[in-house]
Image (cartoon, rainbow, N blue to C red):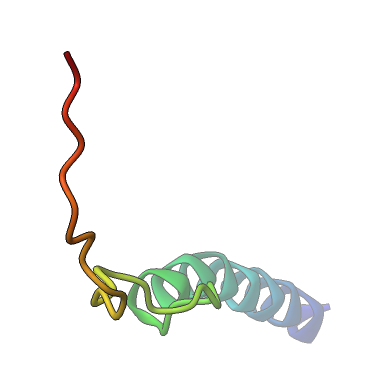
Length: 55
């Protein structure tokens, strides 16, 4: 019966370590989002040369 008590304690300790290890791994691990890198895109078109008079 003595070995049974120790195995239950080891099972509890293993579950407790997993309970704390998963959030810590998610906080300090790599990002899991796969969004593309976006930002300001350069303008490659032609500038409108004519002006429009609104009267």
